[in-house]
Length: 161
Image (tube, rainbow, N blue to C red):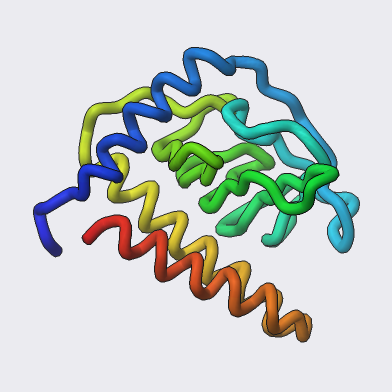
């Protein structure tokens, strides 16, 4: 593995810490179809709107790798790529219009960190999550979305170069 971290990745961590300080309210939401009985706590730094979880559910909660996508009246909005545990985000990346918010999460809030390895781990989890969503969507026959998330997985992985 290369020891280099892109400036974009380090900047994402700084943006994340600033965004979290400005946005500390966390809310639980219910995922849309097809997993209507799957609940999750959206990361507090994400915009609000209708949300859909592309991942698995365990005991009625989002669990494991997946993508949490926001939908607004203008279409698809921000997305969280990463890992959920017991319905809450654990590690991953939020893609916003202004860049990335990356790191480990607790109670829906990104934990501020200046450790480069935290951001490396978050982007790796995000790339795996995007690929997991791609695989799930491909199995469901949604090739356009599967291809989109496969490309997103490559983009997130490339952020580490």
